[in-house]
Amino acid sequence: MNKVLVLDFGSQYTQLIARKIRELGIYSEIFPFDTSISKIQRERPSALVLSGGPQSVYEKGAPLASREIFELGIPVLGICYGLQLTAYLLGGEVKPSSKREYGFASLHIQDRRGLLSGVKDKEQVWMSHGDRLENVPPGFCITGRTSNTKAAVVENAERRICGVQFHPEVIHTKEGKKILGNFLFRLAGLRPDWNMSSFIERKAAEIRRLVGKEKVICGLSGGVDSLVASLIIHKAVGRRLTCIFVDNGFLRKGQYDDLMAKFRKKLSLNVDSVDAADEFIDALGGVTSPERKRKIIGGLFIRIFEREARKIGGVKYLAQGTIYPDVIESNPVKGPSSTIKSHHNVGGLPKDLKFKLVEPLKELFKDEVRALGLELSVDKDFIYQHPFPGPGLAVRIVGEVNRESLDILRDADEIVIEETRKSGVYHKLWQAFAVLLPVKSVGVMGDQRTYQRVVVIRLVQSVDGMTANWFPATPELLASISTRIVNEVKGVNRVVYDITTKPPGTIEWE
Image (cartoon, rainbow, N blue to C red):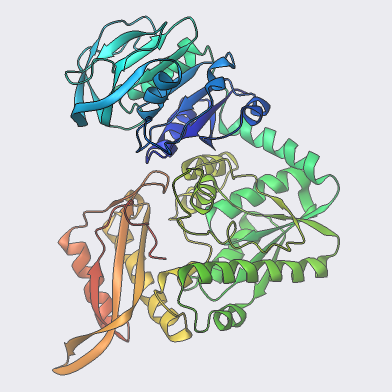
């Protein structure tokens, strides 16, 4: 199978590069910019892409790759900072630009024989840079320019090294996907071989080799990721898989009974159920830190899995529905960035874990997991349900978690889901949920003063959860949600609407 490595220099769009390459039928992975040459060689990539980044190549401490990446004999595409780095390392000259270029620009094509084959002249591209390539390296020629950037596209056809100053991965670059396709198929000579059918067979075979004749347990959360992971593992090892569904006390109203029926009757999985609500709620007593919550919950899940594994006997492997965004957010590959938040099945794992991990989906984005679920014949209604965090409602209660807050939030959350479904917008959204704040506000109900809790409504649109836009809900929808919550949920007298994008915010509040 072909593989493209994306070396990450800190761009906010790095995940988009990997996604767009996969959409073109080529498997891609993101690696840190300082990945060693020996590691890159072991990965046996068919091509490399150097991402953008916020720094200047000539600054002290700027992230730099080894010049040896250009001696591997494989095609290389530099994007924005990646272009400037390519030029800098190969003998070109990069300088601060007198006119910075942010936003839309018109691309004037000089040569269509390579990267720009079939691209329209004067087509819109998206720029975001303050430096410019003043002199191209030896052996390179300029094949595209804009009014402010004379070297917007440069290519060395003989060495199959090229670069673009703009961002072909974002939707604002009209023919960005075509440009990426030209790199992959014309310059690198690859053929698309990445699809969900081939992934299932490859991954099942990989799991069989890994697990052998041993037993596996898989934690079901009630979401798409863990279910799809369990179905792939079941395909690989059959009845040697036992799924464990834990009621941690942080599920939605009625979710536990509904899901148990689906798992056992519709999907014929071997599922053990565990009622551990009191354990989880008590463990979070007095805890207000979001990171502490996630790590406590993740650690307690593991202890329960260990306990259940002892009852089964002979279990050596624990399977999880970890997906690529979980890995990226918990262990970011960017040099200058920090952990965004620890996902309970990544950052919450104890150091003394007694299992070997099986994570069949950790290479996939959310939309790829959904496509995989459809290949595995999971009902569309389940596949296209909104993502629900592993720690559940515990990370939608800002501050301390207790039974009273959980009851309030469950009732408010149910109203949000009911009203978005009733209005017909549920399937237009990535997520719709309520958040309970640790503050009270003054209100008036029945001519009496009240001092009660505040609920936040969060409706967002996204493709993969890595970025998100708040949903421009109609006043009618917001009014119906608000009216029902303050009338039907005891202890709430105020409802507010979150209009924050990701970034700078995250989708969940904790």
